[in-house]
Image (tube, rainbow, N blue to C red; front, top):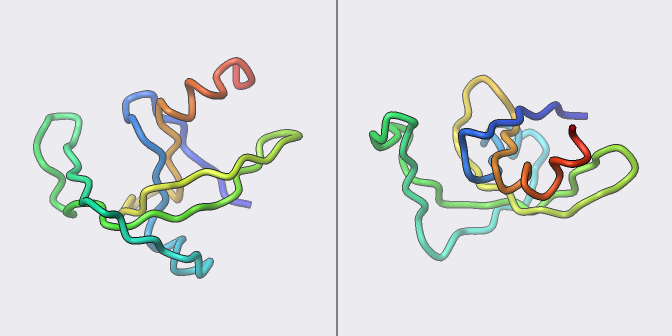
Length: 93
């Protein structure tokens, strides 16, 4: 089991690159790089996102297969942003 951070301040859904390596998830190279900006609108020093993984996310009694962008998250394994919250907010409340 991996805990995730819910973050309404970000748009996407992200997984830390160390978790991807540890779990040996299959990486899929993105057709286009995703340039990342921090909350202060400055480009992230860790660079663009180049890969995704597709994984099962379990929440209560259901499972959903989703794509997560892979990046260096440092202090957390997964961030579920606004796309996740919009789809699941009624269940979380």
